[in-house]
Length: 116
Picture 1 (cartoon, helix red, strand yellow):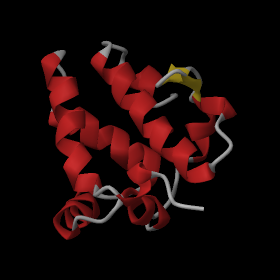
Picture 2 (cartoon, rainbow, N blue to C red; picture 1 turned 180 degrees about the vertical axis):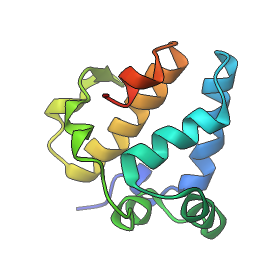
Picture 3 (spheres, helix red, strand yellow; picture 1 turned 180 degrees about the horizontal axis):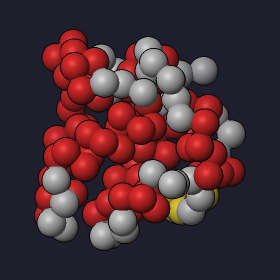
Picture 4 (tube, rainbow, N blue to C red; picture 1 turned 90 degrees about the vertical axis):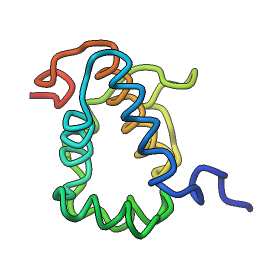
């Protein structure tokens, strides 16, 4: 079975779109990075290294230092699918990230986005 196209896309090719989406709504790159740190456990230096290496999404999530256990609290619809019902683990991780960035762009407070 062929891998989903997004798995082989470089994370660094999508990252600028996350930032643009946030900035269009008055949010910042730093907030996007904070979400990524919270979700994956990457430090800023580690995140920048992954971006420089242009790793694909599969590698990005496989090499994540510590996926946040609170990520399972992320609920809702993204791309027409409920994130909590996605069965493929990697796709669910990607959609968790998409959902968090979407919440940021919609003006949700960081404390709520990070499930504090």
